[in-house]
Picture 1 (tube, helix red, strand yellow):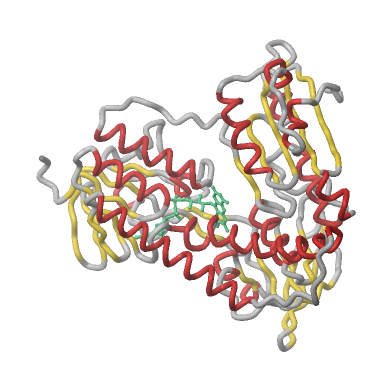
Picture 2: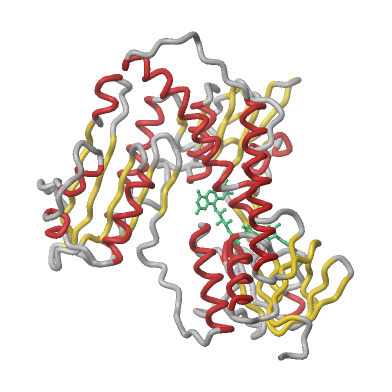
Amino acid sequence: MSGYDFDLLTIGAGSGGIRASRRAAAFGARVAVAEQRFLGGTCVNIGCIPKKLLSYAAHFRKELEESRSYGWSFDQPVFDWRTLLDAKNREIERLNGVYRNLLNQSGVELIWGTATITGPHTVEVDGRTFTSKYILVATGSHPTVPDIEGAQYCITSDDAFYLDTLPERVVVVGGGYIAVEFASIFNGLGIDTTLVYRGDRLLKSFDADLGNFLAEQMTTQGVRIRFNTEIRKIERDGATLSCVTGDGERLSCDTVLHATGRVPNTARLGLESIGVALAPNAAIVVDGAFQTSQPSIYAVGDVIHRMQLTPVALAEGMLVADRLFNGSTEHMDYSGVPTAIFSHPNVATVGLSEEQAIESGYKIDLYRSIFTPLKHTVSSSGDKVLLKLIVDRESDRVLGVHMVGDDAGEILQGFAVAIRCKATKAQLDATVGIHPTIAEEFVTMRAKVGV
Ligand code: FAD
């Protein structure tokens, strides 16, 4: 047993921190986790979970409308934001309790308060000092708003989950996944929604077809999208905000949601003073074992700014615990990490985009299918899906699977397994489809569309 209070002291009880702490405790380590705000971190409280609940809520309006084509009739549906917020908050409180129990049951000590690292083996939490053989920083990230005139009138995704009342008109700024998800949620809830993005394509780190197709579909559903411009200033007149764009356009609204970037939570942690190296974007620099430049200090999750996803933070946290307390020498494999975007329609992707495959030197065959799914043929909603496969011509291996359409995330999880197993196009072709589904198209696409 070490002469420290703990073998591992984790800062941050979010996705990565809780997983690492529980896993370390399961190997017999004496573990504590310090948390200043809420159990479960961003994902549970102001990220994935509440976002998905709002997304479900926003889907109903359209579903109800479509149901009329299927014979349903009813008076005009009425939506109550307060009911949704209360239901969302109850679910989060339930999950907070689940995490509290998980920590208790695994013997991890929970220390409430704001932690600062004061030495290679010492952490101060609101005036109390603790020592630990290893320290794990899993403090996550926070949203930022650019320094423009009127920035104080903007909200971020953190605030969007707790709005007292729903706005009638909203401007969402950004072209990444959080921006398109919130634009879809607001639009789905019946709010007049404009998305402003300084680039020329949504989701710019994904396959270009996905962002382009998503923009078309979101526009069909009623979101106004302004590309190649940005908000220069925001003026306020009573309850009305006026966003002045780089093109000189004035967009009147009640709420401006900025979703243009997140910064790792490294400020005021005491990292620089004890020699933990930070990257220019404030992320903690770690090696392949998640060890920082201070050997007793490790870091995982959003704070290292690799892939800001919950399952990635979980996997990184597990790996640290395995390496420190179970003799593992494994490294994290970031290839083939699937991800979904819960915009309307959903987007999901695994493996290489067309652009990445070409940049990596592959000679590729492309398969692409755009069609109206059966459900929407009857309702004439205008919803279409896009499915795309990227195949290495030489080995026939499927390098990338991409989709925009209903339940894309649910569908692509299985294809992520196939990609990990290095599935070939011939193996997809030999797989019998499930009929009638959207996903069966992935195993029936025969015509190449070019390179
Ligand atoms: P976090 O979960 O953020 O946990 C960090 C914890 O550290 C927090 O609880 C914080 O209070 C605590 N903390 C910080 N500083 C201190 C300190 N000094 N002392 C004590 N405690 C401290 N990912 C997905 O995979 N799927 C999604 O659909 C998805 N949707 C998202 C939607 C939104 C709007 C956002 C913002 C994020 C979303 N993410 C999603 C990303 C995901 O939430 C993060 O990648 C994940 O939560 C990162 O986990 P983490 O452990 O690194 O940090």
